[in-house]
Image 1 (cartoon, one colour):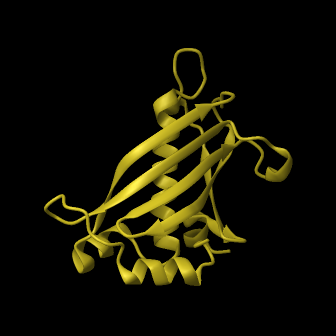
Image 2 (cartoon, helix red, strand yellow):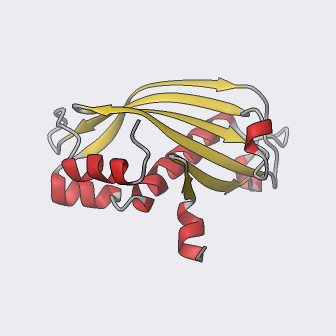
Length: 154
């Protein structure tokens, strides 16, 4: 795997895996990851997921007049991460239809054996696809095709 692909993460059985390292700047006074930073990790993972399947955000905006806005988000914190921890953000597409994409993202502590490692954080979110005027617009065909090709689409 090249450095470029390591930065984007990788796909395995329709699930995007994105590595994240916890830095000092990510932690609070108690030395644990500040709660809002998990949302940053998830955002980075979604961005790299799109880049990995060949449809970066900038292409969606420039070529298809489409961008994403979080419509709904639920987050469950189960356990903290700490400085220097190696985490993995898993992104699973739940559905993609019309102007809406639903995803589940989980953040895990154990990179080697995710199957036996319960998530530290679980995020369920719905993204609305909007045009430059803030109006809902259908998910671009190029995105739907890329999701199908990557086996990410259920």
